[in-house]
Image (tube, rainbow, N blue to C red):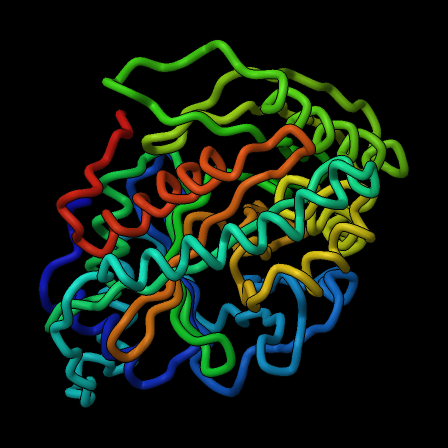
Length: 384
């Protein structure tokens, strides 16, 4: 991605260090990034997506809202499109002045011992998840995990954003920071709600296979097809409540970095765009990141997954009921800490799932963020 020079990169990193509230995002198949910056005060907290009805701004919503991890709406005091406009915005707000940035320590990568401990913890959680699935209590559950990777000396969140933009043209790329949420970088292939005025769309994205040797796999297992069908059926029912002129396309194979997914697109009309929050509240979280039946699966995950997902598998993106809305599920993401990044990945578990295959799937998904961090061993598989 051309245009983000060293001076501008340092300026955006300073905004992170100064604990500013802003989001930088680039939509799929576009070149110009967009910056949304709240220059004064704290972002608006909200407990339910319904509270977003009629509002405009950048949304960051966790999988489960808590006091520690609030849902926030960044007010668009400044909106700039393209690196040149972003740089002008930074200069106008005098963010080119020096702000102290904490030094990052150069640490070794994740040790084999820690990785083994993480795999043991995942296997224990898998056992907790697979038992009720085989008993018929659930049809699908989503099991996720997190891992840490040390940040190199002089790490730049903005450089990670630019690297992700260059590597993954098909995805929404985000860099977001607020005092209440911390710093998040993500690459998401999954729309939860996008559109303009009356014309809207969402997707069912579930089922995963790695790309081997740049050959796109097309033969899907029954497990993957069943997993995708649960998500599509749920979205279909939600849209029947208030959407009109619903059109469905898929499922078909869709590429996302070094992986492919099964994808079904839904296009529809909404009679009242001011009620987008209500629809978002009904959709989130979809069975793609939760399970089925949804409410019971959601409660089970909170009680048995063994850690807090925070903003992983939440909602992220731009909301504007009078203009264009681009809201995605926050997948393939990481939280940037002082000396390390926490990376997240997960996958759908059915009664027929095998722990070894599910563990390998999470490892493949983690490669997306490892590449954004500059890990040469996680090369990009995406193409333009």
